[in-house]
Amino acid sequence: MGNMKNLFFLSLSLIWCLSCNKKESNEYHDLSPGVDSIEIKSSSYTIPLNGSGIAFLSAFNNLGDDITGSTTFYVNSQKLALNEFIPAAPGTYFIEGKFHDLSSAPIEISVEPPLNKKVLIESFTSRTCGFCPWIGARLDSLDKANANVISYSIHGQDELEINETYPLQELLAVYSRPSVRVNRGYVRNFDAPIEIQELLDSVGFYLSFQPKLEIAIESEINQSNLSVKVFGKYHENISENIFLTCLIAEDSMITQDQYNYFNGYPWTFCPFASLPFYLPDYVNHNVLRKVISNTHGDPITPVPFEKGVVQEMGNYTFTIPDGMDVKQTKIIAIVHRTQAGIESSTVLNSQLAGAGNQVGFSE
Image (cartoon, rainbow, N blue to C red; front, side, top):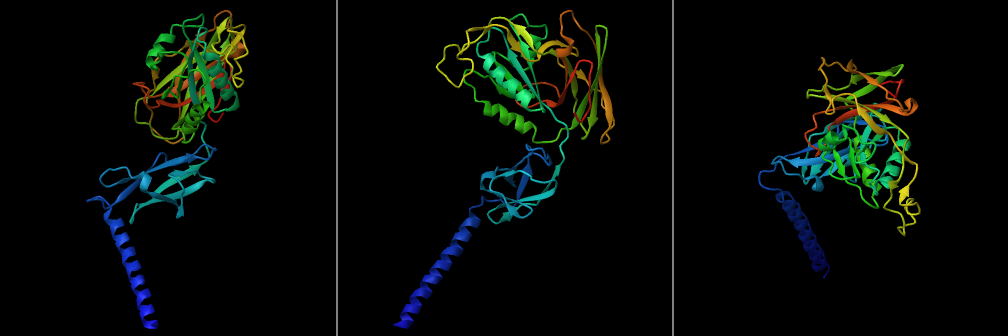
């Protein structure tokens, strides 16, 4: 009887082992015919340690199929829960992926102290845009809370419209207000109760990788003339054509009778619901007053690359008109690629300085 019992459990063990082997065999043969290797990639191979730095990992088989969702990623042999690497310390990290029984060659990611990078937010607005005050208030709050954000507003169909308004609308594919462009590559026409998280996520994404260059601004006021010089410090070789757009904005400009479509809404969470339809003494943040470069940007002459090399990118003179508050006047410099669409970002970096002030590369 004991022998029969032992034979029974031995048979079960053999069946279990065969099942395991069969499962492993099936797992191997689940690979598509011709798949014999995988490759992993990162959204960035140099990450700033600034709280936003993150590498998004992806995987592909040798046939070019995206297998990210079925791949397990390891950082210095430690398994990641997701396909995201968020560093906690500077250093060099090696990441590999495993898909079934295939392993990728490791890729190397360097985590470095952050270079100075700014995220540019361009808000198209109008006094007659009743949805604009709420998004404007949120952009103002973000601008004040985050030193890495530069935001300014472009008015149309009101007294603050300028000659460059419509060329910029055409350039950035703006068809309604409010419209917001983040680094000229993020499209969202914000209406009614907007979800601010998408905007915060976009800012975080652009801060998640190091800039190819940093920007400094020198400016001087001589009577009514404002002279501006813009410099770039290169950290990577840039082979594509790049351009400099330089503009003048004025902060805290007051307009009367700003439309407020939220007037009377039964929303306790909306700060504008209890305010009148026509908002008196409405304060506008960093209003575009003049583009002192070409509206589409001036070409930057290429220089032989050497890490840290500094180049003067542009030199401009602006005549300050009567009535402009010099203390509230700002210079914004944007270095970008050719704007052929808004499907992806074209901005390499941007910088802001008060009129008559100097702002260095690390500021």
